[in-house]
Image (cartoon, rainbow, N blue to C red; front, side, top):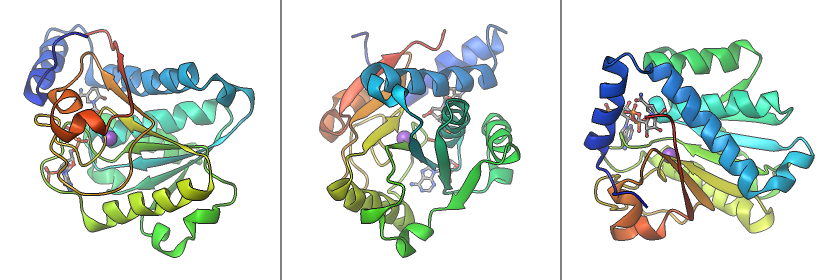
Length: 222
Ligand SMILES: NC(=O)C1=CN([C@@H]2O[C@H](COP(=O)(O)OP(=O)(O)OC[C@H]3O[C@@H](n4cnc5c(N)ncnc54)[C@H](OP(=O)(O)O)[C@@H]3O)[C@@H](O)[C@H]2O)[C@@H](O)CC1
Ligand SMILES: [K+]
C-alpha cells in the first residue's frame, strides 16, 4: 500500500495535475465516481445480474458530486436510484453541480434527507440494495449535522432487516481524513470504502482504521 496522504497532500496532487493541464476537476470527479461503481461490481458481481435499488446520500460538496456521478452511472445500468441530498444543487461547487444537474435533468429523483424521519426505513419498499455515503469526504471540518447523523441511523435500522450494502465514497462521513478521529458517534460501519489515488491517514490511523470496512484504493490517473 503506497504511503498514506493528508487531505492537503491529496488536494495538492489534484491541483498540480489540473494546473498542469493534465486533467480537469470534472474528469477527476467522473473517474472517481466510475471507480466506485467498478469497485462495487468487482466486489459484489451478483449485483450485476439484475437491476437493483441504490440510495445515494449526497452532501453539499465534491464528495456529493461523486455521489451524483455514481447515481448517473447506476441509472445507466437500469438501477432504481434515489439521491437524498443534504445540500442545494445550486450552491454546489461547479464540477459537482454539473453532475447533479445531469442527474436531475435526466429525471433522477432528488429528495431532501429529512423524509428518513417519516419513513420506516426498516421495511423500505423496494428494499435498498446499496447505500452510497457521499455526504462528506476529505472536506469534513466538524462533527456531522444532526440530520445527517439521523439519516445514518435510519439506514442502520434498515440494515437490521434488509441485507443491504453501505459503500463510503473516499472516506466514511464523520471520519477526519487527517487523523482518523470519528468526529461524530454513529453506529454504521461501511462494508467498503473506495478512496482515490492513495489511502489517506484517516483510513489507517485512529478509529478510522476500524471504520473503513474493506478499503479499496482506485487509480484516477493522477
Ligand atoms: N478535484 C477534486 O476536488 C476532486 C474531489 N473529489 C471528491 O471531492 C471530495 C472533496 O470535496 P470537497 O473539498 O468539496 O469536500 P467535501 O468533503 O465534499 O465537503 C465539503 C463541503 O461540506 C461542508 N462541510 C464540511 N464539514 C461539514 C459538516 N460537519 N457539516 C456540514 N457541512 C460540512 C463544507 O462546508 P464548509 O466547511 O465550507 O462550511 C463544504 O461545503 C473528496 O473527498 C472526493 O470525494 C474527487 O471527485 C476527485 C476530484
Ligand atoms: K463519504
